[in-house]
Length: 383
Ligand SMILES: NC(=O)c1ccc[n+]([C@@H]2O[C@H](COP(=O)([O-])OP(=O)(O)OC[C@H]3O[C@@H](n4cnc5c(N)ncnc54)[C@H](OP(=O)(O)O)[C@@H]3O)[C@@H](O)[C@H]2O)c1
Image: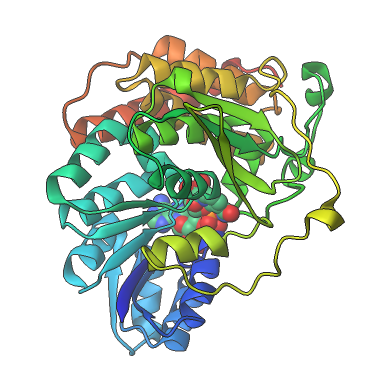
């Protein structure tokens, strides 16, 4: 029986992970966390027989403690870290959103616990340090992002030196094919209407700007140790091919399937075995055709900005990620237009120095500094 701790249990990935665990006799949940949704978290703890939960929000944790007598409620960001360190578990699923996921990633890997990582921001912000930590403690880093899960499976079958290129597919999001001027007036509602994936709000906006693909390029660089020149992005609107690898003999291997996050979640939680997921087999004749196009980095500059921050390396991706989180929140509140998102990120990167970083606490300080600056710069973004 593999004991699973699910961080971000009330979110889109967290809910699908609970579905995967419930269908599998070899997996059991031993701890759950959320940010603020304490009523939902307590209900999930009851349903899954869990006796340890954590809420990052202290008020929410206090409310949960008052109303639930079924177990321990840990509170605040430290409560999440204690949940990881003090609950006996075999694997942690980090499904938090944003750079708030970095602390739990460090805690799990630092304890030598295998980590199923949906929280791509952990690797964007602290990639070099996170991968060094995993190597140091021997904990496994198992990607949950569908593209990286696909690459993980494809690369595993090849000898070192034979994979020339990683190719990440992108759906293109709801605004694929639009020009920069078309994008000037798109609404929050339109941006949240993703054509192929149903996800949390932040990643859905990141998918609309193509920042999500930029974050994934940086994530792939850290997970697989490939140079940025050897990581390509191709737009594939049907989201059937999850990624490809190009090999030294001219072959290309691809990973295909209907878009359903339970597949990569199940793969990460059960690794190295592969367990049943209730999905119908792929019907290529019914699909008829799969199409591909180059991403438009002029209309969607976030992809270009993220690739450049990745190449710059060091702490540039940390600054970029913080600015993106501030920009997405501001867009969702209606404070800046869609094209204001890349504009704010570029202004923040021009303003905040990205020094070499040697320790995780320096990343947390830089993340905070970049957020403060990005919030000030919001006033400069034309509405
Ligand atoms: N959704 C997908 O299909 C998908 C696919 C690939 C990768 N990912 C990645 O997976 C991660 C999660 O995405 P999601 O779509 O599942 O997000 P989501 O639906 O917004 O869920 C986020 C979860 O994190 C919790 N949370 C939010 N802020 C927190 C904080 N400061 N401290 C502690 N907990 C916090 C939320 O709790 P409350 O509910 O209480 O707010 C919720 O449980 C992201 O990094 C995303 O890029 C998602």
